[in-house]
Image (cartoon, rainbow, N blue to C red):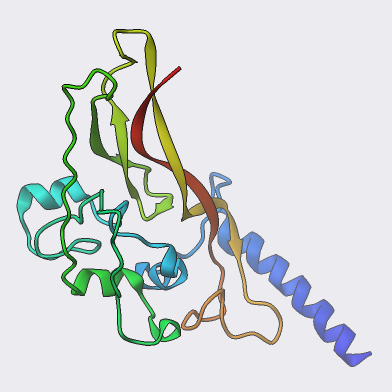
Length: 214
C-alpha cells in the first residue's frame, strides 16, 4: 500500500515538473540539451566517418584546421574503397570502445582512390557532396553522391542514384524524457535524473553511385 502511494506521488510530482519546467511562455517545450560526447557514445558503431561528419566538413576543409571530429589529418576519409578492403579499426575489445567518433579521428586510415572513366556513354557523371541535415540530427552532415546528368547512353536511358541506409539520431523537440522511478540516469551513464531532450533513431538514405538504367 505504501509503495503504491509513493509511486502515485512520484507520478503526480513528475507531471507537475514536466508541465512547469518544459513549456515556456510561448507554449513550446524546452528540454535540457544532451552533451555531444553522450550522443557520440549512443551513436556507437553506427558512426562511419566516410559518410558522416559532426562538424561542418566544408568549413573544416577551407580553414585547414588540422584534425577534426570524423576526419584524419589528411581531411575527410575517401568515400570509395577498394573491393578487397579488410582493416582492423581498433585492437581494443569492441565492448570497451566508448566513442567510435574519437577512435576514427585518432587513427590514420589508408586513403583509397576510385578511377572512373566518364567518357563512356554508359556511365553517369556524378559528384560527392555533403548534405546539411540541420541541428536536429546527429551527426548533422551526410556525404552522398549526386547525379549530374539525367540521361545517359545517347539519351535512351536515365541516370538513377543507388542508395543504402545509415542509422543516425534525430531530436524530437516537442518531447522530453525523464528517469524512471529508482533510476539515476536518463538513457545512458553519466546523465543525472532530469528532464532531457529526446533523441530517437532514424534511417536515412545515402546515395553511393549513379546507374545508367531504364
